[in-house]
Image (cartoon, rainbow, N blue to C red; front, side, top):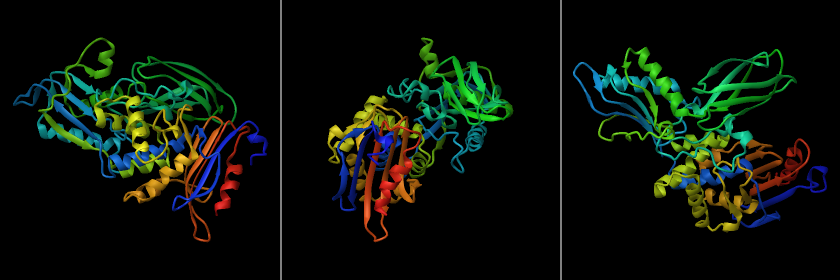
Length: 429
């Protein structure tokens, strides 16, 4: 592998241990490289340990003022959350958008609210206003996999653009609100090479690249303001139920940008609580489908629960402190985010193996192991960013010997390094 043209200017960190943690083989095992999405194992393990597999996020509805006998709410209706990244997700049975809609409307009905004199306020103040880590590339953050972390999420903070004929915008699903589009897509080629450029709170979006001509295509982007999109959905639901909203739709951070300071959600009039799927189910999709949003939400949650500081920096410091406590040298843990999308993350193969060995001894290990995908007949997490590829996981050989391994390659040449990596990993079979 090292003598191949693909590795001419590349770096490799490779480490293999047996199930007892004894080193079997290494090649620059201590070298820190960009791990891409294999970074997620550090976040997932820390989350299962710190929060527990049964942890759930919570979204609430409450009101200010009073409800009069005729069902008129003389006050505001509030929606708030502690950052549930699964709210409105399509992945979980019993937790889909229609389930949240049905339960919220049922709670309003049971409370007897028939009209709202005040505003509908989406209080997204649980986290700070920096929704994406500073190390994320600009050409990633407008796309669905670059969706940011918000106090209130919706549909995993992504939207779909339905394109006609490889060129024209046909319609949107959960489209951004108050955003103007510049469409520079060309109808060329036979594959989707499109990219969306936009940013949190941005009023402008750019669609760029190429789409196959004559075909209908769907491209997915990151919502610039998910709480606002959910607010419009709720406003529509209220109208469908004949509940009159006389006030405005407001979100906490949007008003903050305008220089307005909204009153935080009242705590004495909570009439609805909606709980997310349990963390074991969230971790399944986090690792199986590599959902970056989940990793960054967990990172901010670590910070929030530790010190009320909801920043990415606080989350990174808390996660590094956690892993230092497990005996991994700090020089091997240069974290920037919780998902691995930033190329500024640097960890070593040996550090990943040490993390996997720690997980193997925990009561929740089966949750973690089940969530790992299978590639090349091996249970392992993959990672891919530009010119970087990584695999880390577990394997039992035909003779029954159990291995824990990590293989990280940076700056390789050519289109695909998988076959070379798998040929090396096959030695463990």
